[in-house]
Amino acid sequence: MLIWFLPLFLLFLMIGLPVFFGLLAAPGILLYLNGQERDITLLYRNVYNGMDSFPLMAIPFFMLAGELMNKGGITIRLVQFSQALMGHLRGGLAQVNVLSSILFAGLSGSAVADTSALGSMLVPAMEKEGYTRRYAAAITAASSVIGPIIPPSGIMIIYAYVMGESVAALFLAGIVPGILVGVGLMVMIRVTADRYDLPAAHKVQFDGVELSPIERWVSWALVRLNIGLLLWAFLPLGETSPLILWGTFAGAVLVAHALMLALRTQVSSEFRTICKRAIVPLQTPVLILGGILGGVFTPTEAAAVAVAYAVFVAFFVLRTMSLKDLPDILSRAGLTSAVVLLLVGAALAFKTVVSLSYAPQILADFILTLSENPLVLLFLINLLLFIVGMFLDAGPAIIILGPILGPIFIDLGVDPIHFAIIMSVNLTVGLATPPMGLVLFVAAAVSREKVETIAKAILPFLAIEIAVIFLITYVPAISMTIPRLTGFAN
Image 1: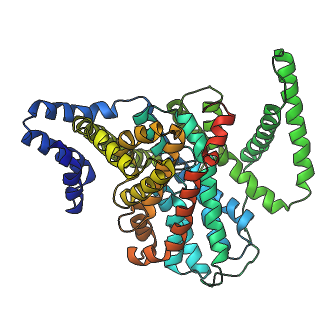
Image 2: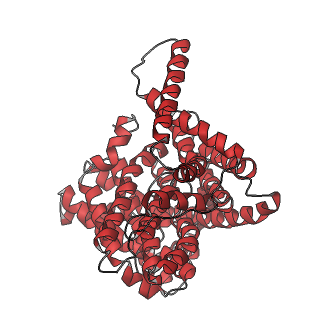
Image 3: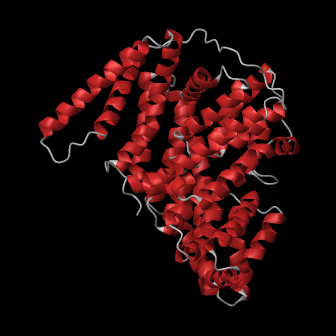
């Protein structure tokens, strides 16, 4: 009888019951009808146990870091940097929208945050330049799905927690797929420029863009340190003395300084100023990934470091925030984190009934009767995940389906990290898919455009994202190369 928990849960969703209550009510009712009252206590106890986890503390910290950076004026700097790089192309602001999402993904890891922060700024700007409002909202929603793919990523933290995988490996595996989605969207914008009569190319003018003395020197130092570290990392030093290590690092920094002096003469002072304004925000993903990969701190500690860095930047470097801004920022981050953690707790409680009902074994037997060819099964599972993503948020979907589907495909020879990326990207794209995609509703609220019109305009971009999903599925090297090169995957 317990096998009916999923149809009952879907019925609750269809009648409008919130996901959190549906995840608890469906299994609770069936356990009661099945005479398993003692298991009901276990079910609701697991709501708290599911949230009481050190790895999951990374989620509220990353949420808070994103809120701090958005309030601290980080978003406008990323948009200006994207305009300096892409704004001169035909359909420049549409290209800027996508590039800004790629850059913003390294700060927030949330599609909803991406849509609300960038959409409120770029949709009116695109409309003013001649884009239709529905097109501007559609490209904002389509590009925002990059947020949870490129690290840091909230849904990958959830997947790693549920399935016992390495957060660092999942973060690294998401870099290339996320960039691939962005590049695909940029190509689609260029291909459809004539059809949608996108604005012609023109040089972007930046008026009144300045740097404070402290920001000038901080960005000057960060550029040289980052390039120097990159050069130093590729030196074949092996086992050597600390003196030689520090000496070669100092030499790498001097080479980086020489490179910057050579490039200085090739670009305008205006372009240099825009780039310098973006250096401090863009240090965040470098700090997070560098610290995790270097073994300096765990993903949860990295999230706390990101918050500390955001506070330091907003209060002391950019000086764009004051103490009176903190209560509003903390309340918004707290509410968002509470929603995510409650869903995680309810979904893990839901997972208890999944194991009691033997649903994984039943589904595994059914899937294997369809075909024993992993390629065919991967195609079918992509269809299933895509449909699930239309109706269910990525976090709960991962917690519910991950323990069911993951072991099946791992037994068929699919690498667990590869399957994690297939599942994460698929469900993330579902956030922008009609009829229930969450970012469609956020984009509609930001742009004051109907969801139906945005859904029609987003279809060409969804086609590109679906093509990328199948590319990731059948070419494992796309997601697995970086984790393997860094030793985080076999």
